[in-house]
Amino acid sequence: MRPVSSVGLACGLAGLACAQVQNYTAQPGVYYSVNVPSASASSGTGDLFIQIQAPSSMQWVGLGQGEQMKGANIFIIYANSDGRNITLSPRLGAGNFQPDYNSAAQVSLLEGSGIANGLMTANIRCASCVSWNGGSMSLSDASSSWIWAIRSGSAIASNSPSANLQQHDVMNNFNFDLTKAAGGNSLNPFVSNAAGNGVTTTASAGSAPTGASSSPSGTSGGGAGGSSSDGPSESSKQTQHMRVMAHGIIMSLAFLIFFPFGALTVRFLSNKATVWIHAYLQLFAYAFAIAGMGIGVWLAVTEQELNLTHPIIGLIVISGLFLQPFLGLIHHFIYRKTQRKTLWAHAHVWWGRALLILGAINGGLGLQLSANTVNGEIAYGVIAGVVFLIYVAVVTVSWLRSKGHEGSETGEKLPGGRSRDNGERRRSSRSRSRSGSRSRGQTTRTRGPGGGSTRTWI
Figure (spheres, one colour):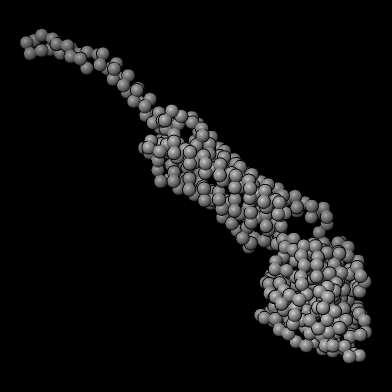
């Protein structure tokens, strides 16, 4: 739905100008509005007024400044402990996971905030919406980027602004034309009698919004004074971070080190055990990847992210790798009988290469999902690129050396211009030659036509 402009009711007393409000309907019953006071519009800094309205049946409702969760300045509201008022929770988005409470936000709840007639309303004054840790927004942007999200379900019923939140049911992004939201000197553009009267904390439900404040610190929304008793503890956050790190390290080792170099063993080893060394190394890498997948699935389930691209591709890749040992074994046993490379070998090689590339790409998606640092993403890309070049170089050299020769089970050419199988055939030929030589040294005696015996060489 498109945002629309409207003239707010706060035309004020003492000749104050009317406040221009820009509205957006996310879905029936869920409304977002903004106003840029004249002073802020002219100076490019200062307060920004925001209103969030949604049915009280929602577990929580959120609005954020930014194109995506990573780097967004987010405002989330939910019912407080007694269910009559709301808690405002300012947060900072770091990625596609629960945003952290932002204690540095300079925000306050204004008159008209609360729960009444089945509707949650938050009238917010924000003094830190021009610049925040991770982003900024121009108050004269004709196409400012915003995101919204909602979660249905039973009330959170918490006074803590850092309460634990479940993942949204629906989210989307949209744009506000802040030039059409500029105007007015009201101290609360969403309540008609607030102009010139200062900021009050009387909620429409008949009592003060829990923890509302107009202090410079901006601490708001929680009688607990911003404590995190209802949210995840620092130790649990640290544990979760360690799990994310473990998952990333294990999968990076599997797809950037173990799988590629295990595949190359058939190119630079030349003995009868090469095929089995390759098989055991790849089975070890697969077991390693399954362990990493287990951690990843646990994280995706607890963070309710199984429907995201990264975990979906990861499950596809790990499931696809299950076929690799069987494709390799089928080719190996057929090759032992025919001494010829089979279509099963091509399927084994190219299916493995495709999954290896897809897995490496998915690692990059995982770094973005976990909001890794830019340096971390660059390091991963460099290592993946170097491994790719090494792999291509080894395979290319192996192919050039074996060109024009009948290759071995894996097609590589051995030192001295011979493939492993050509060498085996030559040894077999020499063995037959020696057997023939011994046979030529044997004689048999037969009776001739005249009754005499003759000696025949075999």
